[in-house]
Image (tube, rainbow, N blue to C red; front, side, top):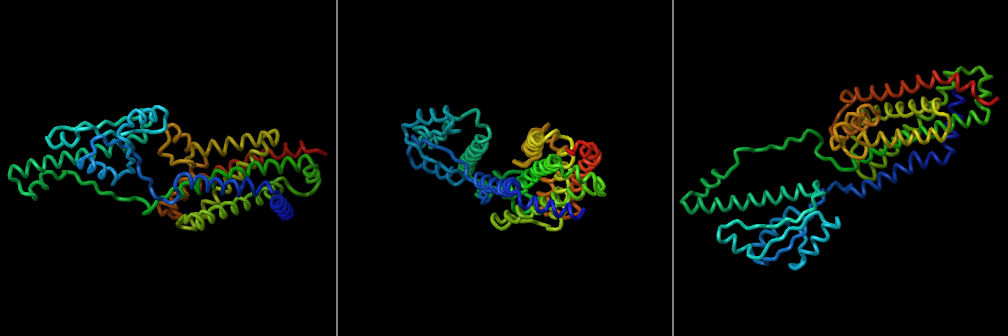
Length: 380
């Protein structure tokens, strides 16, 4: 068995395709996703195009209030139709128009109408804009009430007490004091590309079958179990190294906080057993390498979508979240994020690790049961 392990480790090291699928591709994906989604951790300001047709001190104050919260882009006063055309073409989500007479209307104590032209299909980006505008509207309303109360003889302290909200919302963080998008990307891409080891595993078994090595092994004293373990251990070690390299890349390049390293190591071990165990079972179930590649893509990409590797699971539809619970990717990703973002320790992630081990053991059992038939089909 030791000889088989050494042989497989040498072959894995010499096969340049392994470096591409297991290391280069996930690194490229980490860099790409982290760059696109602002890996620096700074939340980008909401952008809003504004056409100030009033051009008065009162409208400028409104623009300043908006600019404190959003990235306000002033547009020419005569560009309303142009901005509306951009919305129709999907180039903008909304445009706010401050009409002529805004200052006069406010000074007279009447309600001034602002027009928010919007793309009804951009619900996600419109919601924070509408919330901000509503908040500013409430500020104007409170200022108007304050002026009325002061005019009626109320002291400033009494005015503040009257206008104070009866509710106070205290923000209580339940995780670490930070969460950057890289905390989602590095674990997600690592988990996704772990399962690409299944392509290499299937290719190796079919190569041994085609070249006659498997037939010669049948004539030796090596038991099927020893052969299975001898082939499995090198791939297990390869995936462990893959995970260590990718997390080290995230840590040193993107300053990813690893949390409890012992808990992280335990999850990596469970994930490696799950990925390679399923790979063993797959290798003895599929009819050939092409089928193995297709099924690996389905498992890797499908698991990434429903398991929350590309975006947090809570953003997915309810039925997708339910499906995700039946994938090893879900349990790996959530346990990794528990350690990275929620300061979890070994005791907190043992359940998830046991689920990963169950996936791996199930795959190994399938491989062991299918191995005799695979050996008999070997070329003599």
